[in-house]
Amino acid sequence: MSYTEGFVLAVPAGNKEAFIDHAKDAFPLFREFGCIRHAECWEDNVTDGKVTDFRRAVKATPDEKIVFSWMEYPSKTVRDAAGEKMMSDPRMAEMVEMPFDGKRMIYGGFETLADVGSAEGTNYVSGSLFAVPNANKAAFKSFCETMSAIFLDHGASRVVDTWGDDVPAGKVTDFQRAVAAKDDETVAFTWIEWTSKEKCDAAWEKMMTDPRMEKAEMPCDGKRMVFGGFVPVVNLFADSKATA
Image (cartoon, rainbow, N blue to C red; front, top):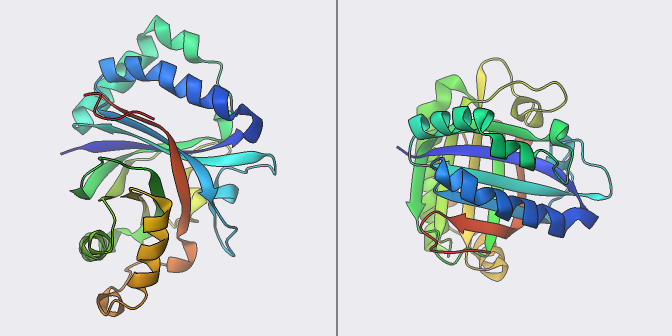
């Protein structure tokens, strides 16, 4: 089963091009270690929330933009082996100087709950984080499957839902604090891919009148859900199927 390394970070707006170059330069090494896709998505529509939001998640300053990012691996075994290789490969030292504050980056490993559709032609991404009671894992998976069908029917090209598996606590920021997760809750990292922002916006309008939405009960606290819209600025595949 595929495995995801998920990230959220704050990047100074003025460092956008340097950030893109840094990510693209690093991908050949990640690909060598087994990464099959690397996506970096730049903030487009990230609003402040009453309880939680992406900006608070990484303590972003007014001059910083949120990046929603992930790396896909064919399995957890490949991802774990990649992590070990990165720690010992001298080439990683050349990538230490990052164009953002790495201490505020949040990251973790996530197992796949659902992955439907195609990543072909992705030009917009809706990213979300949830705090889900551990006891509701099966119900959350069922909820994701229901919502995936609705999203795809209204124009999404791919929907991926993942469940926290290796999500470490951080000194400054982490995924748990991002969604104010309780001790008996796990963080879910999910995203929806669209071929355009226009298609995404139109889909949300249609979904509000879809009768299936009334039956889709979220088995977690929606008030602590974190979400936003992003534009892929790096979208690299190991098979060179697409680049951005």
